[in-house]
Length: 438
Image (cartoon, rainbow, N blue to C red; front, side, top):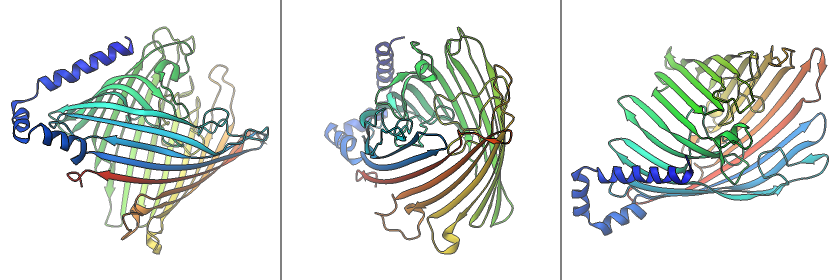
């Protein structure tokens, strides 16, 4: 199905929703008048967001070249109100521009995913959408932001991924759901959208994705989530997790969670030329005691194939700053702790430290053992919105300082693929809301 056909279909869907509106909507239109409704649509209930982001990435490898860059940019977004409580429009433009983009033999910006190859910045229209809603069900078409478990914005660099999709979202009783067709995505370091077959790594293959997800509850009590996607002749994947909180007393609570997923090729197996399948599962326990938190997590990946996550950041419990720990056969364990300095009179400052071990990984084609990996992560975050009595201008301030030490061993030998990685991300956002949204 061509994109033109998809867009025409989606437009027809929107028109159908508009034509089927209850008579009460048109009664309201008659009472308010078209001029008042347009004012509410374009001004009174509109939102304008200007988000500034600067990012420093510096990976020091044992073997050159190192990868490093510093960039600035962010995004500007405008979203209207709901026209006759039914139709909404929105758009978001993104940019990343180099402050420092070395291109030497010893250090290069290529590989940082902050810029295009060669250190070039770019602009892109990452979101441009129209939505229509009725009875808590919303249809959204064209370029949009998706965060549906395995299909997500992968927002760990300068710019997030966005998607071209034709989707229905809504609430059915206690369950929120997403169902739709995803035609293309914009990777973090791309200005253009590419189809879902190409995004998975299948060259010269034009495929889209069917995607469904459902979510119930929250981790404060009990949460259950599930999703599945299908890209014909390329890849399918299904994921589920469950978790909840046990409150021991006012100062102590424990969160427990478990996850499981399966994945494989389908149809003509155009991704690798042959069929494959694998799984991964995980367990996680978090303990919160006053200003301190402790984490212990375990994951296991099937030995038949590495886990593929081409459409978003890997959501396994042991995904760390630099490594995903999702190689074929890999068993990984993480132990970590954090401290909120609010307990020491510094609200908004949080320190996090984790150590992750990944072993037993194999080459799925030969069965040969792969490296044993260790990653040690440290993070110091400063958030204005978590500061007591912070002025309004300070609340959007968010600074993350992160360092990862990655050691890779083959037997007793340290591999040259070991590295140290530094990341600094500074975010600041200005938001204007129409007078009826304040």
